[in-house]
Length: 59
Image 1: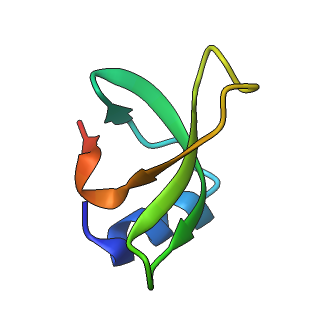
Image 2: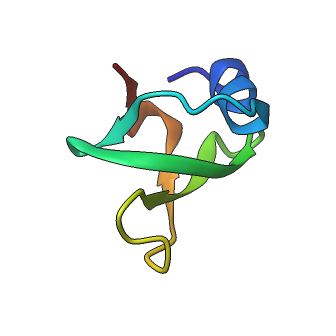
């Protein structure tokens, strides 16, 4: 996913269908400089992780 689109999704009040390793996730924060995002699985909000943007897919 490109950094600009990830930032748009993170800032939007509308929930986008984004996955990481096939699991639906929520994007909390995007670091455009490092091309990473802080995410968590929708069913596990306590399981935050930092992942590369290229690993995110918008369905």
